Image (tube, rainbow, N blue to C red; front, side, top):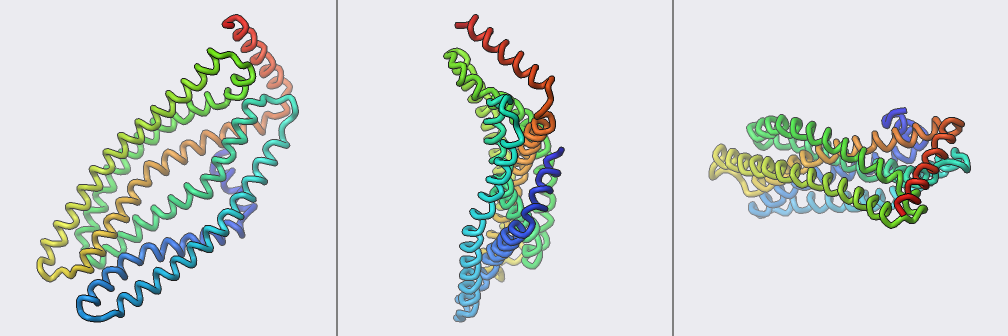
Length: 311
């Protein structure tokens, strides 16, 4: 069973709850996307001695505030219900003689599946709004800036592809080590415990290093986009460019690049989700296999013997 299949089943089961929360979030993101435009209009109108733009900006912001508050309150009720149902079903599907270490690790990893729906997926939706919404609104300001943003997508996609492959491998190795945690702690061997947490630290540091390098590269591209777009806008409009329009262009370029920053993050989370779902579903499909039980017992006996020798 793939990660998409698991997500699809959860979405079907909780279709109404998820539809409400994602609809509220989409409206909230639409309000956040429109605020820079109305901020620019408000500034231009104030310069002209009018408060019409400021009234519109206040109305948009107030509506965004109300919807965002309701959405945050509803989110908690939705996702805690999904997690409770998922982890309860997951644990009760196991027999009493299963590998407790994997069980504990997988129940923790199940939380990450729900976290993906609650946090990561909404973060990706926000990025989609920022990328495509900003391009649409920038089109009304300056088409050349839109072309610049589209060209910048090419290196971002290439960088993200190679980053995703590397991080996917590191996540898999970290999760391999995490599955051993309860067994290592239960045996209580000092050398094994230190080695276990040393390995976890090693994989986490490597993942963090990849994130840092990718962050540096992405922020260099961000600087290029911001500087180039402002130069293009000022050279085309010259003295006729209104302050509010410049504010709008700058804010939408920032929203666009924040959406670009999410692409590597989304790739990392999706690759991690695939590995988690693969572990959980494979364990569920083989939960009552006698040969698996024998293999687990042999593995535990082997580890115990090895730890006695090392002690």
